[in-house]
Length: 200
Image 1 (cartoon, rainbow, N blue to C red):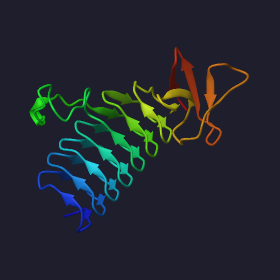
Image 2 (image 1 turned 90 degrees about the vertical axis):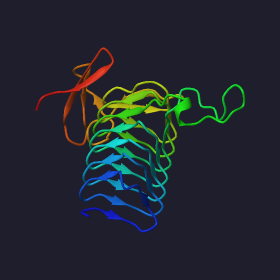
Image 3 (image 1 turned 30 degrees about the horizontal axis):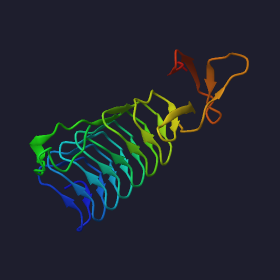
């Protein structure tokens, strides 16, 4: 075994764990889940059956990632984040009979490479989070988030842009629509509500 699992964690035999990954105390990884290399699953985190995670993802303590979520490479999921999976959650059907696995259709959250989801935020499926986007702590995401967007609030709304470092970008005064990372100097162009990286 080329990954580490704490004795109190539950990892199903049919889950796939990538090399160099760590699964900490009381975490649960269900059947069919697939984690890439170098992932860190924090204390008490939950990874649902069939969830797909890329390389170098971090799930902080008590994060809940319900199937059929898909996470790209380098995704950060903060403490106590919830990725939901049901349009119309009910414990029972209209006749009062308890619903089972086949009684509803799971919908997923998709998170692209490098994105970060802040502590105690909720992503309400189905929703997609773009590359390198950042969801602020406590936000409730109910619609798709574009690449590099910084979203906050309930419901979440875009309040700015962030670069690959996670630092908020600053618009150049000499050229509207051109954004710069104050940490690296990398440039980005905004057009029609979307942000793209400029070639170096």
